[in-house]
Each structure stands twice: as structure tokens, then as C-alpha cells.
Image (cartoon, rainbow, N blue to C red):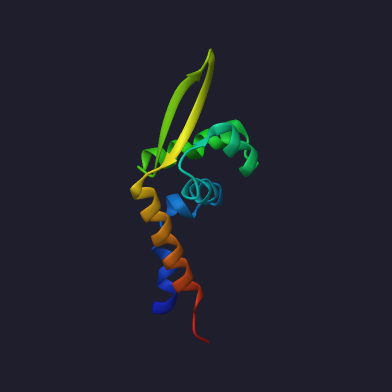
Length: 102
């Protein structure tokens, strides 16, 4: 295999999934984001969004905080240092892999 294409094989698969990439990208631009906002911005269903959040949380890329606003439950999300680092590394690897010399 050509060495310049190997970068694609080493991409972080947790970040590489499009929905998770969107979630991390949105979270990286904010201090903290509420679930409802992320649902609206991403266009993902509640179940799909929850599933992807679970995978990102399991990887240590984000923190989920559940709380009550009055008597109404709410959820907020915050990207971790590891999540920011993984997103940065992903972007660098993808950029490098896409700049294949012809």
C-alpha cells in the first residue's frame, strides 16, 4: 500500500463516524452545549444522538451532565481535553491523507 494512503487507515474510528464528528465539532466550539441544542443543530433523532453521545462518553471524549431546571430534566455536554485532542489529531491526519501527491 502506498505510504501516503496509510493515514486513512489510522484515523480514529470513534471520531470518523459522521454524526460523532458533527457532535465533537459543535462541542469544540462551545464551553458547554445542551442536548436539545445539539439535537436541533445536528438534525439527529434523540435516540441516534444519545447513542453517539454514549460512544463519545465511553471513549472519554465528552462529559455528560444531567440536571434539573426547576422540575424539568436537562442534559448538557462538554468536550474533554482528550476529545479536543482527538478531534485535532483527526483533522491533521485527514488533511495529511487528502494531500496525496499525484
